[in-house]
Length: 331
Image (cartoon, rainbow, N blue to C red; front, side):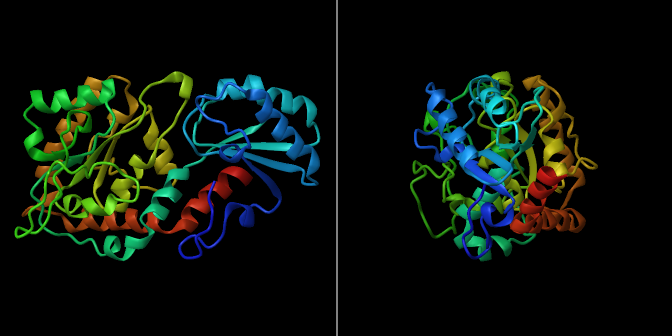
């Protein structure tokens, strides 16, 4: 779930959920992920940990790459339930699927915490983001080649939209040129797209756009259930309007966690369709709405920017993430 850093995140999850024994599948002796085939050793480790603890409540968590809850259910969870009748088990996963078992499944927004930690050394600069003039409508960072990302890039090209944004397609060696002061020259073949610990390198690009179109790591893959990554959280960090192409109804979870998706001023119905071209078309129309209705003199209207800063403040307060987990686990 999360570990404390002593600054923004003062306590780890084990310090907060003290009545639970927390077992992290990302830290099993053998490891457990999407390429796992040795389920027996993971099951044996969990069974040993659960039977040896005096605690009656157990959290089994996983925030890493997706693996499919259906496999976990049949190979690990069902046998655990048969042998641990006196324990209350709660699953806290970054992979959400509905299934018919007598355990609670909490969708862990764990990348919220991770993105905060990744940018912890730059938060003063990030918090000082202001309502300056902007020259582009959107930013879209695309690293690994996937069919739905290729479709998005093709849509931008066919509709002459690339000129209105900062767009990378790293598989084609097309990078976002870092926006720097005019007297600084930089090789635009340097990859500023990849995310880990270098979001801050693109802060000036974020400060020059009104929204980010996030093309998530997976899209409409039933075996994975509902899974997202660090990409979904960057718009909140950098005070731009989020438009995220991910699993259907992702907006419900973000709003449930307290984030503003501006659904009163832009069309967010793209979250509720599986049709990619329909999503793209709605987002294209939203570009016009942003340009014509949400901005003035190349800046956000004051009320819109205030809402963006509230999103940022909500994101940067780790207690909000903790309270979300508490509500879902204890509620």
